[in-house]
Amino acid sequence: MTSKEIINNLDKIDITEPVPANEPERQYYFIKKAKEIYKLKREEAGRDLTCTIKTFGCQMNVRDSEKLAGILETIGYKRSDSEEADFVIYNTCTVRENANRKVYGHLGIMKHEKESNPHMMIALCGCMMQEPQVVQTISEKYKFVDIVFGTHNVYKLAELYCNSFHAKGTVIDIWKDTNLIVEDLPTTRDSSFKSGVNIMFGCNNFCTYCIVPYVRGRERSREPEDIINEIKRLADDGVVEIMLLGQNVNSYGKGLKENITFAQLLKRVTEIDKIKRVRFMTSHPKDLSDELIEVMASSDKVCRHLHLPVQSGSSRILKQMNRSYTREQYLTLVDKIRNRIPDIALTTDIIVGFPGETEEDFNDTMDMVEQVRYDAAFTFIYSKRTGTPAAAMTDTNDKAVINERYQRLIKRVQEISAEKIKGLTGQVLPVLVEGKSEENGSLLTGRLSNNTLVHFVGCESLIGKIIDVKLVESKGFYYMGEAVI
Ligand code: 5AD
Ligand code: SF4
Image (cartoon, rainbow, N blue to C red; front, side, top):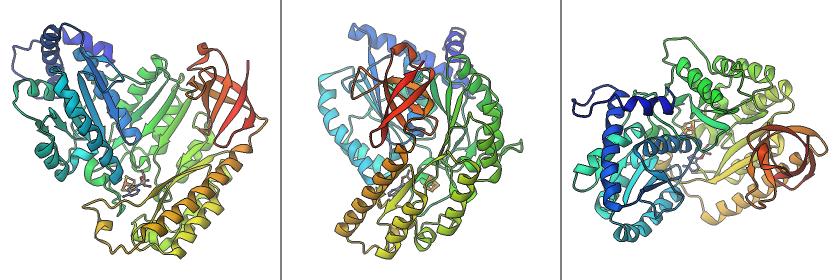
């Protein structure tokens, strides 16, 4: 169902009837009830009420926030960018410690904000809320928070909103895990022409440094029909670029009735006429199949970009990380991909300072960067996450040494990235025009299939279209171009 169809169907729901037990009917019921509560609050305030969602972390959270926005707008809230809104949601991340610190920083400010706005509600959700010690801190020190929920019950926002209206104190609803996937709830997209689409949730890989499997639960895939139908609806609504989202898309399909691989799903997505570009995120090197490389190579709708997190260039550290591949296997995979798809851009994630990482291990990482020559790399300093196996490993790493290594890595990554980007100078390539440039409002900005940013002069009516642009001058991590129309 489209968001519009869902909203039209709300008229038929009778909230004097008992609460439906099944989803999504239960949530339609609560959305209708929440609309009544919103009306009361609106009358009391004498004005429309506003909402804002602050999203931390990855594309998964960005997509979850679009779902939250869809529910809030259906209830009646008007979107705002300000944290002075009447309903503020923080969709949190906990992959590294500084993500947590940021949220507590915001909450410190919000306490005063809430004291001056009697209509204000604050909700916290997302990965950080799946950690019991965080929820305990919130309930002890941040009692002004109205609703706390996690990653598994984002779809329940309307129900929690209704509960909060009748409750005294914070409504807390955290599930340890779930095998439920609730379809057909309203969503408000941030963009009119591109969209993320979840294909699976959770992660079973248990890399030893990573908290994601603990906060996002076990892997579960959406039914292919649900995914394809959602994408067809998006295409009918003007979307041309799809980003298929999963913690490890390569294990898509496990546990489904239909025997289907990620490569087969990807192929089906490319067969949807109005979809012009397909990306996906993230692909684990341990199970990237030849079949996937073939599907990528044989459709020019699949973007020439692969994010292939390496994490470390040292086989010893990779073993400690439980990544299930050696540096040699990774390099062989890179060769195979580049041989079949020569124009592909490869990007990666790298962690510096994993417990016990020696200078020799780090040099292996530097060497990996030299050999692969990534088009871009996201670099992170290892952050200890309570409850993960790595947190229990002996860590004698010196902060200053790690910082120095980190700087060395960034410098080299950036140099290589700039050299690689330069290589396209003079070519005319298709660009999906994404909007006005943030730095210079008189320019438009868009992306090549390989994800490189291009700025150029053009008319705003081009936003959302794919046009040819000549790449005139490389500026480090982006291009200045000229539209060829
Ligand atoms: N410390 C530092 N970086 C981490 N990542 C995941 N967990 C940690 C951690 N504990 C990085 C990995 C992953 C990316 C999303 O975040 O590189 O690929
Ligand atoms: Fe974390 Fe590894 Fe799963 Fe990625 S594959 S989410 S790094 S456990």
